[in-house]
Length: 494
Image (tube, rainbow, N blue to C red):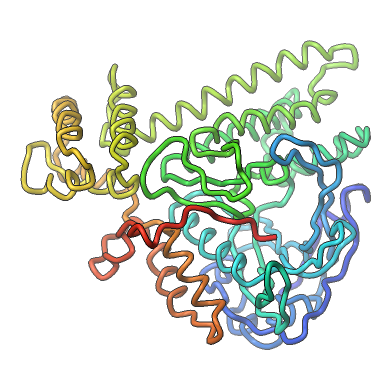
């Protein structure tokens, strides 16, 4: 069994609370992520054993573990909650992977902590399955994400609206520090803890900032640019996080906390799925702006560190506003550049942005499928042919598409790139497969049924692990939902 370390426990005590996972009745490994285990330098056979299940289920501590619950605050739908923290999760420890990177191992559903606020500290199997699938899909898409190392059945029921099978998710991340972590200690007025946390983040995630003349400004810039890149990449695959509270924004730039998240089928910029997002605060097209808002809360926490001296608060505020503007420019540029790549444009020209955005407007008008539109566009040649038919079929009024395609083909003529090379490049940025909501729901229902059927889970995981690869045998996974299959609301995994 690998030896764990935990550097986070050396931070000021206000940032965490020691806690031991609460043992479960009968830990049983449901799935072990063998690919991730290999990345971590773990012996998959050892971790797939009953001893491994005992560790991953929280019944036994591995060598070097100093388990703790992390303290954090957060703006939840714009309302500040000063004390949240890991209410049902335990940071078991850290390990160094085969690439030399330090990674957290976090047990979600490991029992009560000082931050549980009356909750049972447990997790139901359904949300655990959702997070496993969505994390692996994001990894397959090449988007920074937390990932599940394992799912462990507890042999116990958890009670929500009804009794549900319990589970523990063993989650791996580059780090679990959130914007809300900084908010927690800043709200306490503990500047020493804010500084210690910032130094920790620099050392662990952004070491280049240590050599900067103003290290904390460099840190904020680095975090802001990482978030810009992440959110743009979400947008380019039609992903909607669903609950972008400040406690769900990881400083490391990873996608974290897959609750009411979803991928769009039909494209519309105002799409939302979350059952608790009544006003559409976290709708698809609002995500870049929410990133700005969340980063502004981080800037408020760091403001004393951003000043050259204590009397320089206004200058620090003006600098932070400029850094936030640079975030906005970065997320917009990354999104538009990505859109141009999705439609096969390699050499930027005036009018490219408008051309790409006009396609989205026509897709929204016609309710065209987001993923399939871009993937089928990748198949089109520079001249009209019978290969246009599948794409045209996605539009209720194909003439709406035809006008745009004519303009697009005239623009392609300026690229001077062979069709085959352009099509291959487009297929590298336009996935054929996403974890469609109805497929994820089907997997959850099978896994949480009486027989715990994991066949649909394994089949979906095989597909989303290689989302850019064509596979005729997986045609069913490209199909949008029929009306009776549509999932219109998704739920938090609390």
